[in-house]
Length: 165
Image (cartoon, rainbow, N blue to C red):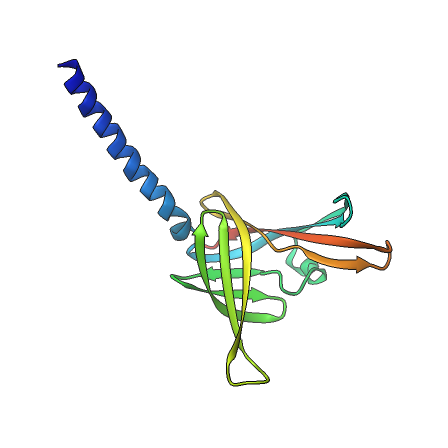
């Protein structure tokens, strides 16, 4: 009799956890949908050799964000499979997918100047959804030689968004 109760209890627990796990996998895709507005951008500059942090700046006022990279998304609208990104230079549309929670793949196509085909640019971002109305995106690092410091540096942008209601 106890074994029978144990098996029933175990089946209920496993069924419930399976439903909960399935809901968690679908959550990020559903939670991303909607319109997101930038709150702040944290820019960190590292030395390429040794990865030592050289400088960290936080931009929290949209007007001060004109000093950062022009391709940092100031607003993102996620739909089913496509999205619209607003940045300092205007707007662009593309397709996105979430191959795994925490990874966002974005594809943007533009007409090619040399042929009638489109050029496809693919980007991979990492993201977090720490709260239902908060989104954190880490952009791919930018590498260049800083002439003031006279050394190669790595620039890392972390963007913080709030969901528009």
